[in-house]
Every structure is written in C-alpha cells, then in structure tokens.
Length: 294
Image (tube, rainbow, N blue to C red; front, side, top):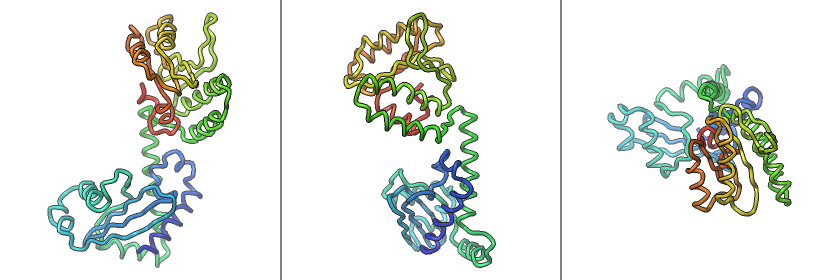
C-alpha cells in the first residue's frame, strides 16, 4: 500500500505540472499532494482515512487500528464522515490543525476497485485524484470571485518577490518610496483598483484605493513606530473628502502607542484603519484577504 501511495504522488505531481500548474498556484490548498508532504493512512477493519500536511520531504506511513473500539462501531458508522475524521485526528494525529483530509471511505471494495484500474491500465489513480482536486479548485476559485475575495496568486507571488528586494534597501526614504508601489501591487492582487502618487491641491497621497473600497493610504517603512500626530494628519486628509472615503495607515513599525490607536477611533465620521508589519505579512502571504482588514 505504501509503495502504491508513493507512485500515486509521482503521477499526481506529473498531472499537476502538465495540466493544472496555474490552477495549483491560484488555489494551492486544493492540491495537498503537489509539494513535499507527510502522508498518513489510518485504517481500521472497515474504513480508511488519508491525511496530509506540509513537510520538507515526502513521508508516508500507515497506522492500522483493526477492530477499533470506537471507530468500528455502528454508532461511528452512523456519524457523518467529517465527525469520524475529526475523531481520528484527535486520537491518532495529535489533534493538530495542520492535517488536511485527502480521502476517506469504506475500506472494503476500495482496494479491489483501484487494483482493477491499475492492472487494466484504464486510468492512473494519481491522475484521477488530481483531476478531482482540480474540479474542487475551480469551484473554490469561482466562489471566491463571486464573493469578491479572490486573490491573484501569480500577481501576489510577484509582489512578494518585490517585497523581499525592498527589504534589502537600507536608505529609509528609498525603501519607503519603493514600498508604496510594492504595496499597491499586493492590493491589486487582492482585487483592488489603486492609483500611485496622486496629488490633490498640492497634497501628496502615497496610494489611493478606488475599488472596491475608497481610501487614502499613507505608507511608512521607518525604524520608529508612528505616533498619534501621524494618524491625526491622515484623519484630516479624509475629512477634506466625501464621507465614503476612508483612511488607511500602513506602518511596518506599527503603532505601539495608545494615542495613535485612539486617534484612529476618534476619526469623527470617517473610518481610519491601521495596518502594522504583521498585517502586511498576512496581506502578502494571502493568509487574509484585504477585505478582512476592512
């Protein structure tokens, strides 16, 4: 079984490379076997579960729990599969949230069906599983587009590389200026329409978001954190505009003083948002969609 699983990983990745590379970049969570991973097959007398999580190298192991007192019972069979899966993770995999279920089902009949497919050379199980995951990925991508929470992973990867280069700039002014365009690229990857370096009546705006939100954005990458006075200035800039315009202050060094945070809360009839370095990392990694900060 372990040898078959190793072969499946090989053909799975071949299929991703040949047919689903762009989709795998866009929805990586839907292709859990595309990169190095730890795979655990948990089998009881009548059922099986396959779990995976990211790893530095491929690792595959089988855990057999024949005639388990809790899993091979009528009560367990009556429960939804996801309930039993959570139970398996809790009991045998340390209750770690990193585990992702790849497949689960009744053991009886599964081996015969897959053996038939392999020996008759009708379909490769790795290809079949990859195409199934691709279908899920397409649904997920479509749903994110409908909800307005789609992230263009290719554009985001380019922004991540530009952020890495920007990190190496030593001059604070040059780094801050470069960061403005890098942040704008990340926002565009999150579906925003942005304009750089806008000037209104002699007033210089670092970044201006026009869709789906409307916001004046101040961007700072300095050694020292931003104090209340900086946030007050941004609040005044928003007050000179229609009420639908919000303010966003992005500071890699953060806002440690309560005064800065209080200034954001006292923005009168304007919404003022603060993003620190940790928020920026979440934005560039894609762990959070920009709308979640709003």
